[in-house]
Length: 140
Length: 136
Image (cartoon, rainbow over all chains, first blue to last red; front, side):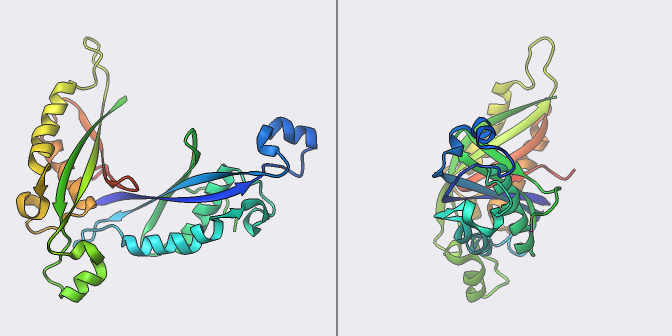
């Protein structure tokens, strides 16, 4: 009985989209107002989906208290109320939400032992969201 | 192939308790969900069926028929009920969101003749939901 379980979390962070390999003009053309020099912020919503068999003993795919604790410790504390650009994770990576989704997936892939990480989905605003289910080169 | 999703809501109470465990163990694993007086949620159910649009009607499924099945099998059976005490599937099974989604799948899969069930998504809270796709 394989079931997917999704839990939603929120965190707030700032970023500026600027690729060092592009000229200032190209950055402006590519990223528009996301390239403003002093950055800006979002309330990100993170949906973490795990999957696995339902335990006959507990009726659960995973212990939610433990899942919350791992996400809080390894993701929320790391990114909430931070400027993404100055974090080590983005020292060589533009902090687009695409890249953020990959980074968060790679972190949780290492953190979750008891349950399979299926995908992460991040809403940057109500209008756009990004999903990553692994398959690329890990960033860390 | 077209996927069609119908949504409905029900409110129910439940508690989590494994009778083979001590009270301490139940409390450790299930936290406040182990309170035997129970507690409740407003559940939101999204049922997705799949099929080809019928050339005559343009429908994947007769929505009225789907709504009737949902009303009978889920809403009448679970809305304003105590899941542990009133829904037979949970006489000996813990009514976690995972197990409720599986029970709803099994109830619907038997009754749906016109379209194929694709997914049962059940929200316990806006920040927690499970998906069940059956046993492929």
